[in-house]
Image (cartoon, rainbow over all chains, first blue to last red; front, side, top):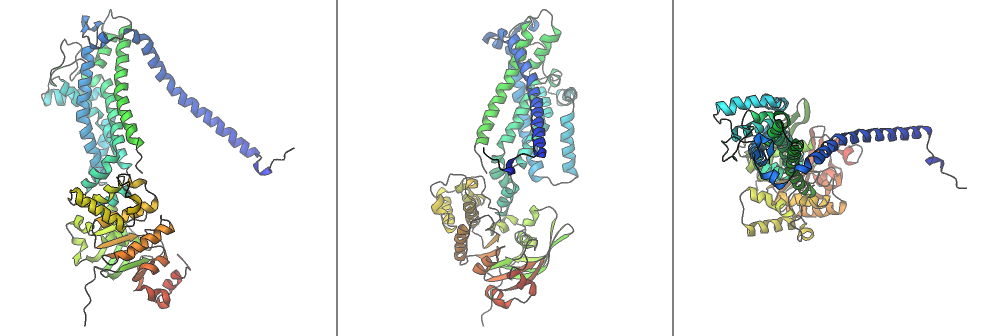
Length: 295
Length: 255
């Protein structure tokens, strides 16, 4: 019979600690799994109900019978216009603001005001952004109800997330790198351009992903500023009105009668696929960036 | 009679505060051209703060306040308008090696590029010369495109020295450079420093008393924000210290 070294025999206290640890682990795992359930359910329902309606012609054909039949070519195209517009506006502005806040701003009343403004901007409900967009872009700047006005509205709405994501990633670059660079006689901008920015690409991409998610999915901010229920022509310029997937989904699910059962599900499925596809590209790109470990 | 050349750095009545906390008080000293000036002393003696004040790195630290006069090459550094030019003439090596997340080549070429050098041949020449002088060339010459921040600690510290040399500085500030470096590399860097003394002036802050003894021409002892004494290194170490606290520190009774 082998004797066990008494040093390694578990005391009652150690046994209890072990039991508690197992319990906590199981509980936390259960909560985490709980989060997966709705995600899978949503995706599952959409695929089961919506996939049969998907086809190439569904994706490219214009809607017919006010949207109750035909495809979703125009809304899909419109959503891409709106998202691209919002990105083109929000990314440069957001990154610029983040660079200022992270690299230049001192802790004074101005900086604090800006930070409070960002937090508040993030908390404004999207319908209020919509009304702001109507006032500021459609009427005051005379953009009219157009892709430009809607993109501007989406951009204002997504700016806070872009700013916060970018600022976090800039802050993640160690201060020692900046000091080393400054002590060589580099200006702040030279330091940002050569050392800080090249190492915060992944955070900027995170901002882009979050921006895309909201820009593709939001309905309220665009329905007053540039999106219409029905339009028979593809937009020719940013001053045209356009259809959009999110609004189209609202349309076919609640406003129209005699809609085939599968149609709203198919539209929703396409909407989700657009978001996933755009995000997937950005995430793949981000993983490549992160894969090259820098320090 | 030969008149002594004016000192490269002259410090008068230097005091440094962080808010209410006093880090350095009433320091007067001169650093001569082409000497290695050693600074020893326990933690919190104000050594690093002293270095920071020399090339106005105090501006990177919120709340750091510098009072008194510092002249570098005859100019009052407190009133220098072109800070970038001042910092370019003073190289700094920090305690923990900072290999920037750029290639080894770009690390060393950074400073020349910042000052507008773009010709490849010229940059190649600078990079090779500085890496050779920092005793790193042979180890990295085949992978200059590799990331500088992924070198080992000792290599990164030599890379940092190469980078400081690429500024072509007149004054080199070394802040406890051997803290994260193995003894063999430390010895190699010390050899490098002895050679560099021919061309430039070095301020060596060190926590290794013996390192100061090996390298410094003159050594000063800082304690609790005061510069206790300054003496030729050999005199200081062979029983010539005036102050009891210096003797105690050198003999390892505290610190």
